[in-house]
Length: 386
Length: 223
Ligand SMILES: Nc1ncnc2c1ncn2[C@@H]1O[C@H](COP(=O)(O)OP(=O)(O)O)[C@@H](O)[C@H]1O
Ligand SMILES: [Mg+2]
Image (cartoon, rainbow over all chains, first blue to last red; front, side, top):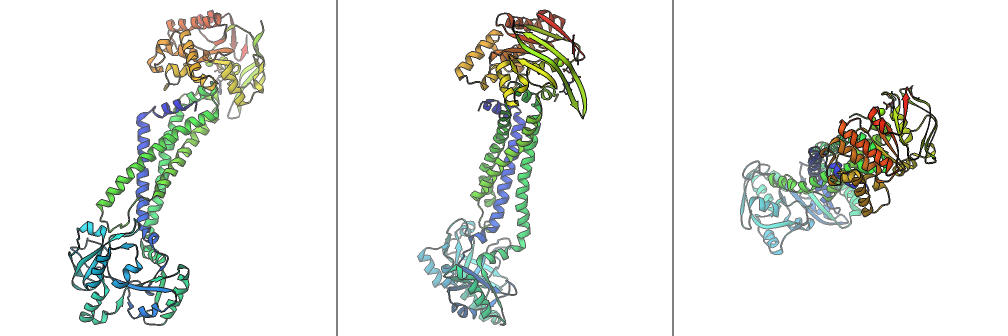
């Protein structure tokens, strides 16, 4: 590295320009990491989905219910281990801005088909025993300061009336990909009240969650299941949980694709910022490169000199950007309610992408100045007047 | 004495957008070893071009140039670069030092291309700076030096790798009378004490006085 010292000193030559370029790259890397994290958060549901869970919903639409009577028929299909079910309960807690998932679940089977919700044994038992008990995620408990024994009052909307649930268990998400902001209570509790107050809506199930023993059977079981209810009052549509989640976010898919696209536009912007700096610097030094060549330095030396400077700037910028991403993403996830993006963290692959992009951008931004420095003859370089 | 530089029937043209600019026309010139040659002539007469050809940073359109028995036209670009670093010391009108490097580092620059150890490089640089009388300024940056001092650093850089010939293109062109005098005295000393062959382009009659031989170039022809 004969030119190392000159490379470093060149990098520090216009301190403000270099600092601004590094800052620009750092900001872009933060924006990139942030956008990718939002995108990841959206898709986290899909990624967290289990391959041995099927979801059966009303074939017309997710918002229409299915009869409770389907449960036993489904359970008889070969390869089905457990049949569970839930309803989207919604309701208003405090005010309409307090958004988190509130579901009526079959308490007996729900924790079995969702083993990623970890509950201490004693809490699980209390939850199962009491009809108006509920279970909340640890993140939700933290956000609203829920403790065991607390009563959560909810104004029903889909299911009208005043509702009260007692917190009897708090679940821990098994890992970062699991949503820790849900609230579950007994479907039977909901159904009993419906029987009394609105008998027409008793025995309604939002969707079935079916645990199968072998993920390879998913196709066959889905077909058999849907065939079972063909031509009935409520036809079904069964798909793997991953497919179901994807369908769920399809409405927002366009925005996500846009964010995804933007995150790569940002890389293009870094490229222009750095490319511009390198071209300016290299142009000002045209005569110096000619002098170096005169003294016997080769094209290889000039390439190292220019590419090195470009890489120093891009990697410093990326390093600073990555370091800043953690506190910024952390701050964001503190500021927005946890239930908006239940799963919000920087994936390692995002950092690898940012680092790799910085490397590529560093090399690419030097390409044009290198080509120019090599092509300019010594005599033209010496006669160059910046 | 044997010729160290032989320029044989050299012509040189530049092309700009497909039209030819003839600059040198059938030049022949022999420079004996230990010579201090002055090249004079009006601006645009081709002095710099001839000097660049001798120094191997440009190639003739026609003819042949031998320096120390090497036909430099036969060398590839990279061989030529290496050849220059061993054989030619350059002194420019505007010094052309690297502004981000200290005097010491500027003088060390051509030595980075040799196999010398760090210690040996240091000795060479110290020696060269002593010859030009700037040992006390080795850690100064070019912008902290006067024009005359910058040119002396440039001369130290040119002699640090002990080249066969020194080429100087209007080395006093940008200097005041006093500094110019110092530079010329220094070149004279390098020629006399260190037996360096020097080819110096100038249009300053006082500079030409110091040379042993003066040749006039006019409209691309040697008089
Ligand atoms: N690289 C070049 N490209 C085009 N024209 C050049 C180039 N170098 C020199 N010339 C032309 O050649 C002529 C001689 O230039 P030069 O050798 O620099 O003269 P001098 O040094 O005697 O002033 C001038 O007309 C100049 O414009
Ligand atoms: Mg000239």
